[in-house]
Structure formats: C-alpha cells, structure tokens
Length: 385
Image (cartoon, rainbow, N blue to C red):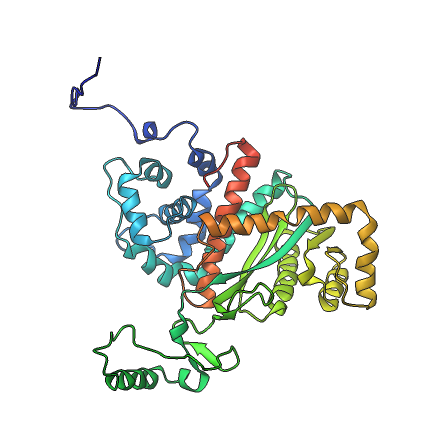
C-alpha cells in the first residue's frame, strides 16, 4: 500500500547539533586534530585587550579548513553553506540557531591580521610536528613541483614600460575602444588585441597580479598561461607533506631551488634529517644533485641520458640498488597528492593575488591535505574527497 506523509508530528524537538552529524562522518575524525587553543594563543597578539569582542579567530580558521575540505573556496558560498550544512556548522562550533558572520569578515581579517602574521604556516607546521610525535614520518622523501594557474587573465599582461603607469595604460585602452566602431566597450573588460605580438616574461607583466608569470611545461604541448610554481616535499610512508611553497616561475630553476629551500626549512624547523630524496628527470641537473649530496641526502633521482659529470654518474650508480627502485616507485605518490589538491581543494587555480597572499593560500591547502593524512593514519577513517 502506498504510504502518505502525515506532516510534522512534533512542535518542539530536544536535540543537539551534533545529532545531525553521522558518527562515521569524515569531519568527526579531522576535528580533534585541530588545536583551537593553539590558534587562540597564536592570534592573541593580533587583537586589542580592550574593545568590542571579535568573532573567535579559531572559528574563522575552522570555517576556512572546513570549506576547503568540502571544496568550497568562495567566502560568500562558504557563509551560505554555514547556514544550511549542519555538519560544517558543528565543525566550526556554531550553535543550531546561531547565524554565521558576513562574508567580508574573512577578507578583512586576512588583510588586517592573518596575512602578515604567518599563522597558516604555523598551523601547517603543527600537523608535521604531530606526525613526527606519532612516529608517522619516514626518512625517505619525494619532491616535485607543479604549475598552478594564477588569478589573472592574458589581457592583464602589458609591456613592462607601461606596467609602471597603469592609469596611463588604461587611458590608452579606452581611447582605442573609442576608435572601435563596432559598438560601446565594457569599461571593466576592455578589448585588447594582442594577436601577432611576441609576449614573454622578460618584456611583460600582469597589472592584476604582478608576481605571476607565463608558465609552461615546455614539452607538454600546452600553451603558456599566467601562473605560479608550487613545490612540495613529501615523506613516503603516509604521504604527509613536510613542506609546500609557491614560487615565482623561473623555468626548472624555481623547482630545484624551491625544493632545496624546503629541505633546509624542514631541518631548521623540525630538526629533520632525511636519508634519501626521490624525484623525476626534471631534477637531474648537476647543481641540484650536488646540493642534495651537500646536505648528506642520497639523491634517488630518475636518471637521464644527458649529463656526464661526476654527480650524474653517482646517481646512475644507484640505479642498481633496491632503495633507488623503491624511491622511484614512491615518488609518483606526490603527483597523486598534487592531483588531489587540484581536483578537490583549490590547487588548480589560486583565488588570491600576489606572491605573499598566494603563499598563504598554499599553506592552507597544505594544512588541509595533511589533516586528511593524519585522520586516516590515526583513526583509519577515510577523509572527505
């Protein structure tokens, strides 16, 4: 027999917000890994001891982490999700009848407090320290770099001599639009015809994001586009990131120098000394190999036919060993980590502009990825995609 809906049977319900969150929800495994007291301790110098109480800073960071975990990168969409997603509301710590704040709260706090304080980098480091404490970190690492699209268009690139005076360049664009007889132009998106012009990083800069560059893999067959280089160092046991940072694109140099910087950073901040480093053929350069040897790390780098120096020969000698083959098999996992970040957590295209702000977004994504790894390693509960 076909059933009928009887409508609302009760007028009052004696329930809590936690009852809306399933017991096997992935956010339940991640929430205990975030130390809200540590966030308040780091943020205390950023707030005045007197005046009107602010929104708790730990709730702002929990909302950002929850949003990136669920694939929500827009501040306005995140606030909308906080109004209707009970699991996210519980994760942040809002009450059942408590309304979220305005979307501009995120941008104002970034600009006034969080961007220059380096709190996101410290929170990322906390996940690494927790993994070291739980003995989850292997001494065998993998390194790689990827290209991430910047929040800038091709139209925003102008010759460097014009980039020094943006207002004059905008006036020239408007004058060229007035001469176009095809109809009125959009003042916010003027017509720019750069067909046939030779544009490069030596001669052009973006007015929207001056730190981004035309990036390209070279042999991949894809055209250049505005972007940044993001380098990462990952341990091979649980795929936990020991370092992640965005750099201005400088061909392969940005990847090699960036990885060496991350290795030095791991030693300085965590007193961590790796034994081996796996990487692809893009790192098979004499300067990089010598830098790895200088740090007393075994370079398990994919060998190429080019190069005849002593450093190249020392890498080729290690091809016959089992540790080298294991490192080469594990180093592909870092590419899977990049793919996960691009597909689900906002690493495909940055939302912020400028190198310093882009680095803050990179630390946030790295924090999210490490929290997922920790949740799976410590509880066995799969984290949200």
